Amino acid sequence: MRKTLILILVTIFSVAAICALVYYIKMDGFAFAWALNCLLMLCVSVFTSVLKSKLNSSYYHEERWERKGRIYEYLGINFFRKLLVWTGWEKVIRKSFPIENNSNALINLYYQTKKSELDHVIILLIVLGFNVFVAFKFGVLKSLWLLILNVLLNLYPIFLQRYNRPRIERVVNLIKRR
Image 1 (cartoon, one colour):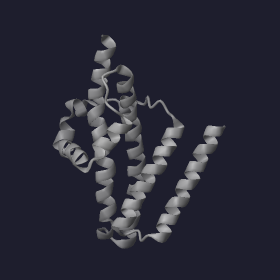
Image 2 (tube, helix red, strand yellow):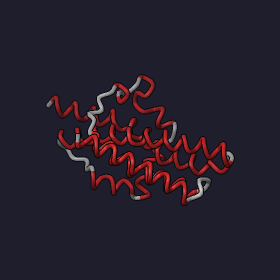
Image 3 (tube, one colour):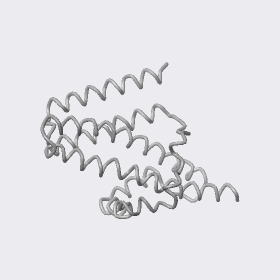
Image 4 (cartoon, rainbow, N blue to C red):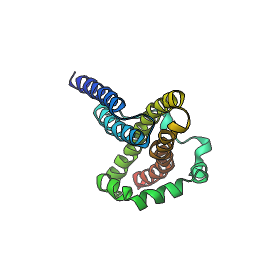
């Protein structure tokens, strides 16, 4: 009961905060796109943390076309990884989720890739809805910031999780065998 109440309160807060954002910031600029993504990252992260799902869906399994991550390398995932190091994000995230050489830390990291991917998929879809709305209401050019930030802040992180997870899974399986 408590968990349900918290999830409802998080949802109500999120909707209210988004409504305030729409009211106070013009929807057709960089400030709105950045603030919307940051706000959604906070709200969705809290929501999925409270939800504490096991994330056992087959969606998280590596597909045949994803084998060895070649498609993601072709789409520029290695450049995106360098960008994360250059901006300092990699250091920040490694403080929260360090990479250690033990099975528990790797299993936790494996779970975090699933949770992070879920967070970014939810945000991607919400921002995409705003993107379509802004494109119809203000024009396609005015919606470009939403599109660009959605790709950089949500689509590429999804690619990164799907690229890293099979590698982490292989290491976890090797440790379990020993």
